[in-house]
Length: 270
Image (tube, rainbow, N blue to C red; front, side, top):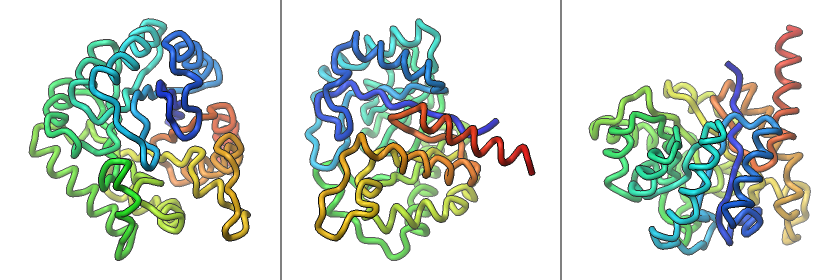
């Protein structure tokens, strides 16, 4: 099996990339179907922006945003992931048809998350995390970012397994852009083999992030806006695929599908 493409579906008014564009259930479902047509293997539906500095919605608001969308997309045959840090949202999303839980806190934000995931038996994406959006960019100090992230993810695995989550449910995400400076992100991309060596599937999420927008921009200059970062994102999809990762999480599915086709064609010609 090759690298999977997880299409991002932000049902939020304040996402850094496309906040508000898919905020109504109808618009969100239509965009999800469009991502499927482009070739997405998974649709990752989230109702909370995790951009630096973002405020958290209350639980009821998050549920109102994501559950109707998940239900409709699952009915249409989509493989749906719920992007949430709340156990209650994860539980209701699985009931509505989600088959993956993607928690950017890796189960740290809600102590009930491990129990929900263990009971549901669904794959669980565990991201490296150092705190909520308003705090994370104050926590960017590492001795060796690759070693430190691998160690932290290993600790999360041990804790989650002790709480009843099966090892074969776990997918690891290095958390590019979360409590990371640009150099940290590049180091993690350059050493995906270290993450792979932990023995779990790996999800990489670089899509439209600020460190890509700053490529080629002079010091102090304005980074390119998020919508102009898809070519750079597709380049990271190639890097991730060559490293053999399980999946990439992207906003623009079509360009990453093309990137993966290039990788597959080259591999087939070896």
